[in-house]
Image 1 (tube, rainbow, N blue to C red):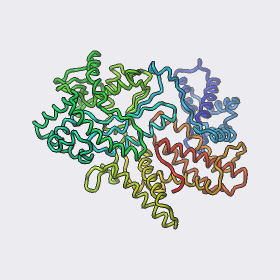
Image 2 (image 1 turned 90 degrees about the vertical axis):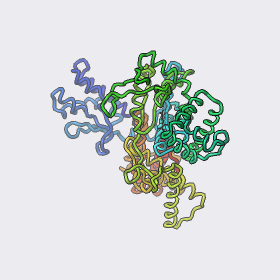
Image 3 (image 1 turned 45 degrees about the horizontal axis):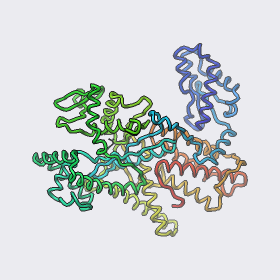
Image 4 (image 1 turned 60 degrees about the vertical axis):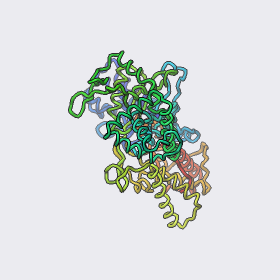
Length: 606
Ligand code: ARG
């Protein structure tokens, strides 16, 4: 409906200019009339759109709102472009104007969808030649980003799932997307780990595959304990870090081995979730850190606070209410997480060949890092690294909790390993499926059962995460996410299975005919929903909230199911049969596209 709504906006603007000529407007009137006065209807019974400026205007020009609404309606009805699209406007309540799109327009939009792979969603066109000047089409999404020698946890899972979905949506819109895995692969933790391994498992430092990731995680824990307790161990660890940063050969080999071990483990998860990422970890920026500090120093941004180089930013106060410094170089000369992120942001915004030259940077991490990114973005702004045309955003998300509302843990109180989480979802999906097969006296091959339960399990985990507003904490519940009822992946998958079933029963879904015709209210409701896809995608592109797309797909499935249950399809006479199959076909394509943009696999039977 994007095109239609923009045509209506234009018609409305024209009408308002006719009634209230621009030169006669007071500043207030002007501001009311120049804002977006056409919004999607809040309820289906109000039609498709609503014009709501009569009320705001009434106060300003001291006329009854209904009178204003009548004037607007009269003017609109003189406009041929408007009349082509809309039924007669209806004035409701104190002065709202309700608009509903006429069936001819809806029908022609449906025709367009029948033969359009993008289902009416516009593809952005960019002048890539301009890229060198920094005005371009490249979006960088920094997501997943686990830490070497530590286990990937549910927070990283959320980041991975949300980041992947945003990447897919932006790619579909036409952007070039660079999916960056900013892995924690540098810093003090390696000093500790290498120092500790020298004592307990020196062979791991020069031979492949000696330690498992779970050993590594344990070693790291023990190393950290020693580091906190033992001054001598601390000093030695620090000197290992110095060795690493100085490029000492043996230390580098050990570091590589440890990174590879973790990397293999991460990759297993990415493969199972079908996630593509380009690894560019913290170590990549090591060579830029010194220059970052001198750049900030030249711009007079640094303050020396007890030997550490810091910046005091407006709005950043500590728990004691005092201004909180953001440290960019520690008193021992070492750099930290912030320094690396400053180097990263500069690199990502600098045009090629020195950097990536992106136009939009998106960082997907838990909300706990909000003040870190606030600081990084502020400093980058002060240092003038962010061109005015570029958008830099932190995309925060809430905690993953157990059903008790507490942090998600195993029964014994340990952190849950991601592989176990995925396995459990698949195991439960398999159990549900077997129960259902038994109840329906169906028999299916082992292969089918495995494929369906893997698809459903993974789909359920991803969808449960994406369908929540990411900002809120979310309660992880296998029961809820695997249910066939409610806003769940299985519910959406089931709508697709129903459509595939129609085609198995001989319904031809390859409809491209001109002679489609609709009569039932269920059909029109479905049509209207189908036509909203483009606005929903545009919203996700702007606001980076995948739950909007989930909510849309859920409503679409509900409306489809009502249509499927209440209106005959295969048994209908022509042209109704073909017309209804056309709606099924567009619903199928819309659901598949939507699920694909969420990174969720689909199936034909379940
Ligand atoms: N490794 C970090 C963590 O596990 C996340 C990194 C996010 N990206 C960034 N550019 N800081 O919390």
